[in-house]
Image 1: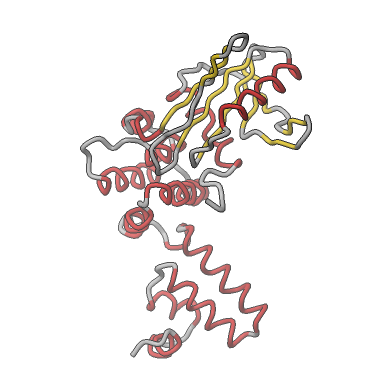
Image 2: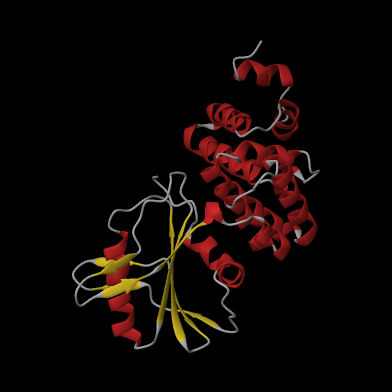
Amino acid sequence: MKKDIISKEILKEIIFSISKNLLHLKIKNIEFLDKELLRIEKREADIVALIDKSFILHLEIQNNNNKNMLTRMLRYFTDIYSTYKKPVKQYVIYIGKEKLKMDNSLDLENIHYKYNLIDLKNIDCEIFLKANDPNSLVLAILCDFKEKNPRDIIFYIVDRLKKTTTSFELKKYLLMLEELSQNRKLEQIVKEAEMLSNIRLEDLPSFEIGYEKGIQKGIQEGMQKGIKKGIQTLYEFGIDINTISKKFDISTDEIKKMLGQK
C-alpha cells in the first residue's frame, strides 16, 4: 500500500492497549527511544521503547507479507541490543488482508533466532471490546468478529467512543477508526455508524477534511472555481446537499447544477 494504515502517531497512542491486551505485558513506565538504527543503510523501526527500565520493546506493525521480514527483524535485534545492552522483546503484528505467509524463526548451525509474530485477524475482537478504553475499541475493528455481524460491532464501537470521550477526543478516535477500517473494507459501515449515532457533523473527520480541502482549493484556484471544487469535495465525502447549501449559502438547485445533477 502507498501509505501506512497505522501511522506512527496512532501507534504511540495505542501502544499501552496493545501491550496490555495483546502482548500481556504489565507496563508501568515507558520511554520511547531513538528509532533510527544506523549500520550501512538508514532504517527506522516503528516502536523501540524502554519498558520499566528493564527491557526493550521493539514493535512493528506490518500491513503486507514482507519476504525479508525475518532478516530485517534479526538486524533490528542486533542493532538494538548492541546499542542498549538490555533484553529485547520483538513483536510483529500483522494487520494485512492477505493470508499471513511470513517466517519468524531462523535455525542454523550456530544461530537460533525467533521473533513473536501475531496475526490480528485471528484475535477475538472481544479482547479489545471488553477493555472498553478508546484505544482498545478502535483496535477491535482489525480483529476477528467471530460470528458477530460487522455492522453490530462497528455501531457498538462508535457508540462507546461517543460515550467515553470528549468532543475533542472523539474526532481523533473517529479518524483513527476510519483509517483502520480501510484495511478490512469496512469504511462505509463506519461512516454509516457515524451518521446514525447523532454525532455532530463538525466532529466527523470526513466533514473536516472535505471542508478544509474545499477552502484550500478556493484559495488556490480562485473563489468561484474554488467554491465549486469545495462543494464537489464535500459531496464526495458523503455530506448531503442541504448541509452544503447552508455552509456555502447557495441554493440546493444551484448546488445540484454544479454537481451535474438535474
